[in-house]
Length: 304
Image (cartoon, rainbow, N blue to C red; front, top):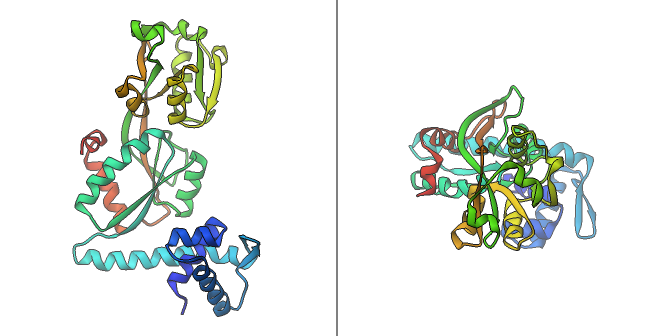
């Protein structure tokens, strides 16, 4: 009979592509990981991994085994959680994918409140791109996700998660910081820092500017950065102005290193959603978290 722990080790090695990294993830030694894989290969009578120095890759058989191993482990977890749930206890481990900076700030408080009710549930937050999250939801690698855009896939089910403000920030010593408000046309003259093309905040900004007959191409773009934290620091350093999530700007605003400036006629907001795939069965813990979010407002979770 296959050892579920061995299958779990195989999946971690397959994901990380390295025995040493897998060992650190599993909190065991590299030789222990290697031995577990060797025993599994001997039991199955096939080679699952190609060894290439410190790195490994899946053989053709390993590629076939990977999704089946995931299915077996997920089924095992559902069996365990179902039995325990019959005794009134929810437990297990679950992954939540997140594509937005706002989600990263919201989820810790929400998870903390959820675990006060279900202390035996371990929740891992995976910050990733939108395309990657879609693939992971469809494959079952993650059961739930937080994103700022609804994807047109029939299998996905959404519920409202949070309404996020996208605000203009400037360095604390910028002239605009004293006035507190500017007009949309003023944005054309200042060096501005943008998020990457597919970022949700960039899409919101593009839509807001369009209402004032301004395109992104008309802006004086100083640089493009891939996350809100880096942009906030760049603004602190005086490299430009930027539009980012209010949640991501909170630290700099509280410390007085940046200032919020209103733009006349522009109130930028975006909706965040909790999403799941209807084709993937949820564990009891995932169902409980889905219902938990439905019953409360995320803004309350932040004050937990």
